[in-house]
Length: 189
Image (cartoon, rainbow, N blue to C red; front, side, top):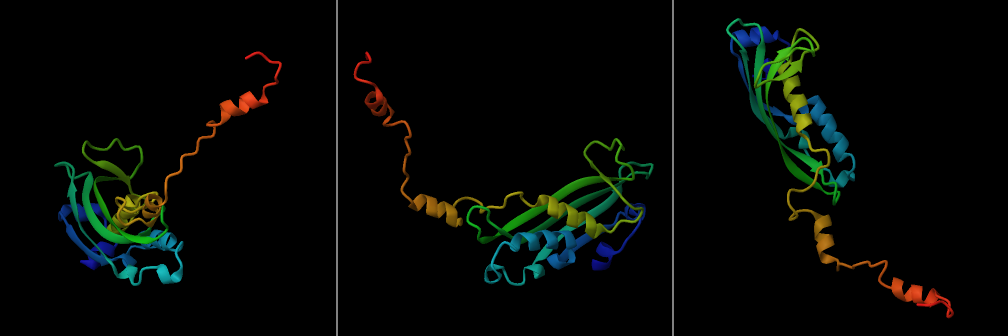
């Protein structure tokens, strides 16, 4: 199936055969996802970076079909999952995050195509499509803008905040006394 996933093909040909492509690949086969993860993990010292993260798996499925009986508009349903290493933006420690990408796409040649109900329009830049590129782009889009541990349990920053005593800063607490001291003795109260 790896060949079907990475080989350029006409979308209409994939839809004509109602092609279903099972995905079971390593992260290293997804260049955009690999680059995004490399940039994120680049914040860490070399010793902190997870080993062999490029060998982690991406799994899922693509299903090609036509949107209607006239066999004009190609659709693809994409489901993909990967557990990836990221850097928590609160504690700056590595952690694993499950990415899930799912979409019902209508493959169009022009951006102004009105689309179909229930499908998101996906503009094709070329006549041929590499199915792996769809999955790669959708997984990058599924990455969080600011990655952080799910909940507070694993985050070192949250644990430090909880351990530190909470100090309440009251900048105006002594204001009345300061105003009274600043008044001249001959001013009426």
